Image 1 (cartoon, helix red, strand yellow):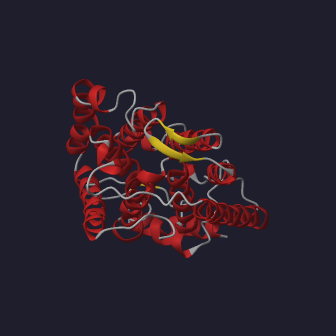
Image 2 (tube, helix red, strand yellow):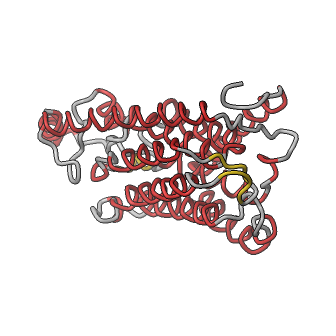
Length: 325
């Protein structure tokens, strides 16, 4: 196969099970504050003390600095988002709303550094087979472009209803797809033998909820599914590398090149569209929401913004019309 070696039926079924398991875990975490506290504080503390020092130590495929930083940064994101979701004054604090953009940018930047690092690596490194090449540079650039096109953080709101999801209306489908393409290319480049699960399955598990279950909450879905996956893979590192369900990358330079090329092209397209929007609509990407004129933005906002009392409805409608221009 082009991207991977042979994919047996058992691995295909396990891939579906991983996607389903991550989505279910995400929904459990969404269900209540107490479930989130148990999953993102109590569980990681126990794993840090009793499990990961043994399973994710030196020589393990998950024993690198990147994996340790990734799991804790993902958990930090989950906890920070919880604070914004469940502490009302933070949801209205402009500086607190910078945190989601910051932690997202940090996670992207971590991966970009690793992609550039892998450029000079070949053969077995930290238990993972590496094939470094120009594709790492291409995808590193794609990641930087993806980072630079993060926008609209000031418009983050908390959804009405008991789940209190963190909604980012300006983070729309085209940016999410560009992120997915970049992130898959990163995993395929840097830990190719893990990418069947850690790339494709993990990304699908947060993209499906973002498009079909709770729109506008992609970053929350992403942080939570990433945290669950990192906790799992650091506890069971052989699952993706040498278990009966493992699927190896083809390590084909042609595949590596084209995966990164597609990611780079997609992110260039997002940059071009964003610049066009900024210029045409005279928006400030550091302070303004850029895509308020798009139906996808308005759909997310209308489904999640606090209900306006009848007496205040005309004024609110006027403000909404003005922002869409």
